[in-house]
Image (tube, rainbow, N blue to C red):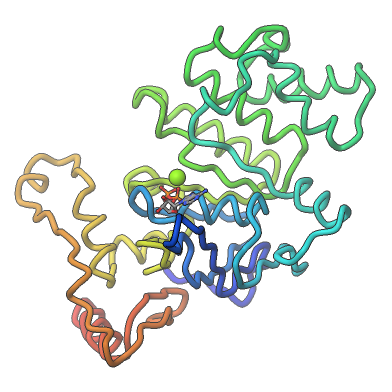
Length: 316
Ligand SMILES: Nc1ncnc2c1ncn2[C@@H]1O[C@H](COP(=O)(O)OP(=O)(O)O)[C@@H](O)[C@H]1O
Ligand SMILES: [Mg+2]
């Protein structure tokens, strides 16, 4: 069911955001005119295949990169321009990122205590006892023990390391978390544990989460809304149910067709779809990201919109 967007508070507004890299003579448009909002308290799933710009978008939002153009508003405050010290503090206090690889993102020469307390120290906290207590509290919250603080990352399993990564992001008590494929590098058997942990913490700490995944199956169960990226573009965005039941962009349909079905019979009869971007003829009509049903957006030209609308009508 489409929710009433008017009543929900926007925590993040992304307007026509572009992030380009210069690769020799070539310009890589990693994020290409992307616009969407994230509502306070929601779990927003961002999906798309490897290389489509998800990490770049995440890093741009927390201002590890300077956007090439466009605007980012956080709680109504513009955080996309040149940041002075106070603005930079505001961004790092409120937005945090959990990285994909819990091995390479943790400094092997630092103890868990040192790794986790870093964010608080950057913020000027010097009191040893305050730091120790903060780390001990957050370790408990992520299912580790206070005494783990004296150990080094290599002494932990992959799942535990990701818990340390989560603790490091959360110790500063941000309100918005970007979880960049936080379970992709983990054994399938422990992926659900880490996701459940994140969801519990989200509730407890009243967080908003942008959860990045390369595969729709991962975000299917816990996302409120889902955005699909293809080659730097956001091609479709809708409530999770709407996206699953009524996808319109052919790329979304292809991603959905790749999700294995638990029932062997339907798995056998399922048709696997492949996306061929050359089916779009944008030589005359330019595509735009437009609303096809309330809260359901798709990247399409006007004639494609007409075709997609007919498809949706036929589905009832
Ligand atoms: N620092 C960088 N310099 C140059 N190109 C980059 C850089 N980071 C990412 N890219 C390019 O931007 C595109 C998007 O990459 P990325 O955001 O990592 O995608 P994803 O996270 O979806 O796999 C890719 O073509 C990648 O090669
Ligand atoms: Mg990535």
